[in-house]
Length: 149
Image (cartoon, rainbow, N blue to C red; front, side, top):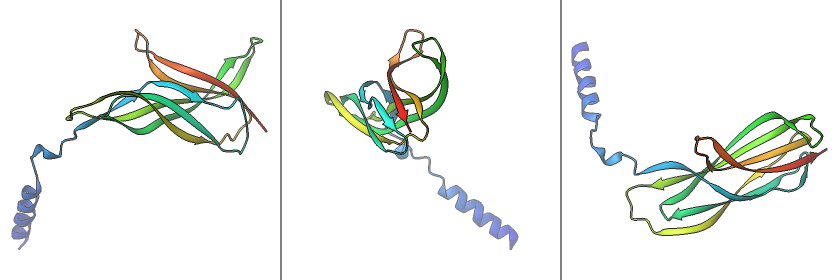
């Protein structure tokens, strides 16, 4: 009986394997350069702010997927040369890019947003990815703001 059960499970396993490539994805993901962002000059702890981000969709094969949002803290030099503990938010626009379709050129500016609620007072820097330099290092638009109690 055990051999019969084992044979049945093995047959079921092999029969359920599908080597058909019809399920392969017809898209990839790509980081799209930010053109501009709308950041308030100052904010208050506990209030929610809508941050808008503009980017250019080169063709209709590009579709917004998500924002890559990373938080960090850095010591950044202020105007007097003093190091200030600064909250840094790095943001990049991620699009789904369909690869097996005829694409119509658009070159249109698209706007997306996220809601931001600061939880600590102090200086913040928002960095939005705009591309890479010749060494492969990220280039960013930077916006500074102050969060008040």
